[in-house]
Length: 104
Image 1 (cartoon, rainbow, N blue to C red):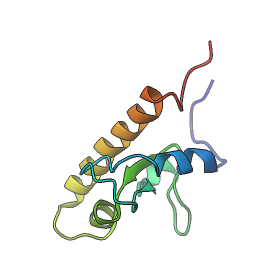
Image 2: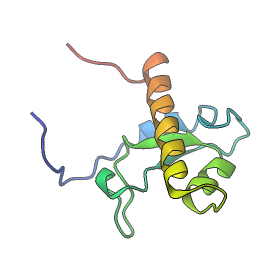
Image 3: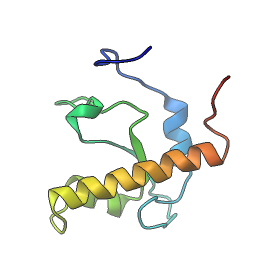
């Protein structure tokens, strides 16, 4: 069972590479700038100089990624909501396209 704080960071280079192949899960553009953008939340493992776990990613284009990380057009809550929605869409794409699945 998993509960409590995970002490080791989850890293998966293949997962990050796959997420970069999707269209931006915020604006829908697929212009070659899409990256696997990590969460900026402490609860997801983010720390000073440390990226969050690789399972807390969102496929975002450069423009949307910048707006979430450094932009000033949106409030902090709007940026968080935008990232969370993009993350959910990314995870859905990973499952729907067969890159993630469950073992029974």
